[in-house]
Length: 302
Image (cartoon, rainbow, N blue to C red):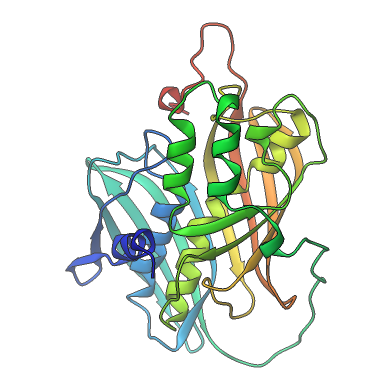
């Protein structure tokens, strides 16, 4: 297991301070606020630790309420909404400095047989044929106005091997493309068999690239090149079939709409052998900076 992955797993191993109250810390982020995927994954960990082990997460719905402070701990308060014969529901509020920054509802289910069908996996190049972040980013360092961006991107992806099927928007700013993006990802090392861990790591990664397809449609590069201010607003995931986050997963993403300073991203996550594992939907803030308005993520007050 790589050292960055071990660090990420420690980040997800929340401290239990009361029966239904947990505390977590943050790691370095690309922007001066807590990474949304981190707080979503930690909230799902908190919910899962109050649920019987035989019940597995099948969906989550979340709102990002305030930018998180990466220098302060986050308290996760779990509300045991319902424990039924087959389903368990939990509500989690993430709190910093006395205010809620994130809200999550998650549902868990005991496995049962049922009807079975899925959309087929779309064509995609083999992940081994694609460049790693370490191969792709340094040779394009001159595209970024801030010389620290490459190092920050590499640090953010150090625990996860994430490979773009085509150049990401921050390398093709000014070129309008179809609002669709594909990445392969897996953790940089093997994981335990705990299904909750794999679901939480997929939740963590799901917030990394989902809004890329919005930027591609408009030839925007995003925060990395300073032509868009963005932030996650809400996020939903449905976990259809078992999967492992330490094996290659295809994240097929597209955007059906952008308007009103917001953009919608939809996605499906497939296992390498073609099983549809997860569906994802997210709406994000996507603002084009106006004259006199800073493009820095730190300036976003929503």
